Image 1 (cartoon, helix red, strand yellow):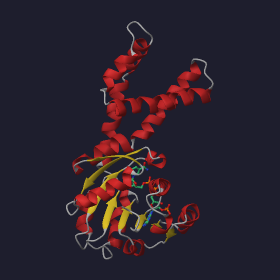
Image 2 (cartoon, rainbow, N blue to C red):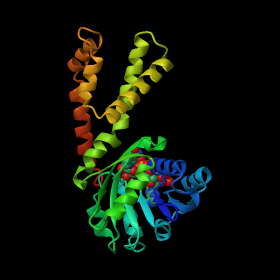
Image 3 (cartoon, rainbow, N blue to C red):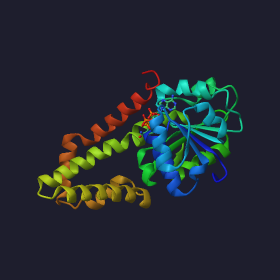
Image 4 (tube, rainbow, N blue to C red):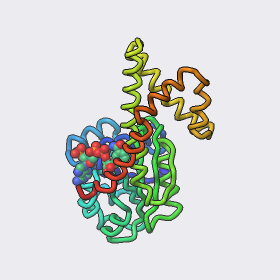
Amino acid sequence: MLKDKKLAVLGAGKLGETLIRGLLEAGVTSASNIIVTAGHQHRLDLMRERFGVSATLSNADAARQADIIILSVKPQTVPLVVSQIADSLTPDQLLISVAASVSSTFIEKHLKQATPVIRAMPNTPCLLNKGMTGIAAGTNAGKIHIDIAKFIFDAVGRTVIVDEKHMDAITGLSASGPAFMYIIIESLAEAGVKVGLPRDIATELAAQMVVGSGSMVLETGEHPAKLKDMVTTPAGCTIDGILELEEGGLRVTLIKAVVKATQRAKELLET
Ligand SMILES: NC(=O)c1ccc[n+]([C@@H]2O[C@H](COP(=O)([O-])OP(=O)(O)OC[C@H]3O[C@@H](n4cnc5c(N)ncnc54)[C@H](OP(=O)(O)O)[C@@H]3O)[C@@H](O)[C@H]2O)c1
């Protein structure tokens, strides 16, 4: 689907680079089909060196050359970049924004023509093709545009198609979520050290256990509570651990973390 398409990544920072690496490693496009932009020349040089992609400081030039434009600058920089590319875009192109907080309506309002806009909210595990991306269609985007976006993000993980009203929640849950999980893994590893395990072994145990637990939920399709019950032997050790988690408020803390991150996602464009 992407083989003969030119892809522009406007703002090849952490996420832009993750997507480029993921797409190249998945073999769905080649470096000769990718052009990137950034705020500074040294970042472009690095991208060129790392991936063999084309690079320019001009967002308008990159957008003009591309069939699909991925906008991955910070939310606060979106208005500037959209104003720079507005004259270059046509309805035959597709603009995919991964910026948190910025609605497709905001972008559409600043374009000169009815270029289809898709909003996507990926996360950093896309780097290892284990990403999770929410995708929502803007006003002028049809099934073909959703299919193209889905193809791009399926190459680097799983995707869900949602109404745009859910994008801030996806930002708070699966885009911010890896940071929450790293803290949980780090804490579990710390616990392993406390009960006598070498740190590297404790970290491996914790991380693989989290990967395995996630896979159990996805692959069995069972409710997480049922899977939890399968581990929890009556009067065994797991129920004692669960009691500590409930007393420490783990559930409420995680719920509040996602709610706060979701609320913040609504504000990023302004601040
Ligand atoms: N990080 C995540 O996990 C994640 C997940 C989902 C969505 N997002 C979204 O992805 C976007 C990028 O996030 P990030 O974490 O990748 O940030 P980042 O690392 O700061 O990347 C932003 C990039 O934009 C470039 N840039 C700045 N001004 C520009 C301009 N005028 N024209 C073109 N490029 C410009 C910067 O270039 P220089 O490096 O040269 O300054 C930088 O490479 C954000 O909107 C964020 O909401 C991020």
